Length: 159
Image (cartoon, rainbow, N blue to C red; front, side, top):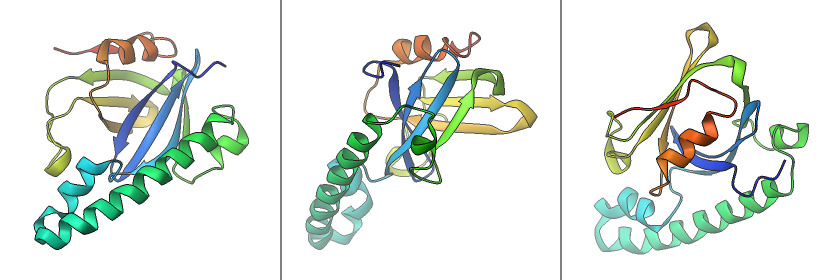
């Protein structure tokens, strides 16, 4: 699978995933944490004042480098393959048949703190389970919706 344009980023809890989309499944690779760039690092350390500023810069530098290293590692693997899934215990593969609905919501939906106000993706899974991702970094929602529609034909972008 050519993964160059077949992915988007989603934050679930404290895990940042690069979510690859194939014709039949979603494959999530944990590439970072909820501190994934300088802005999120500042938001987490700002309450420490000037000391927090300097700590935040160091934390951001390390987080950005680790994210880049993880992305390079997963770029060399086939999404969904055993080495891909085994790369981190948080990694996942969801077949399109496991996902009953996928709804992208462009408005804030209750996430709190430094990460509030962004669009979300909610996946309703078979068995009543849900997964909810905050879509980070101003990604193109119609593009993500079209990606999701490949394995999940009922994927929708709400108003």
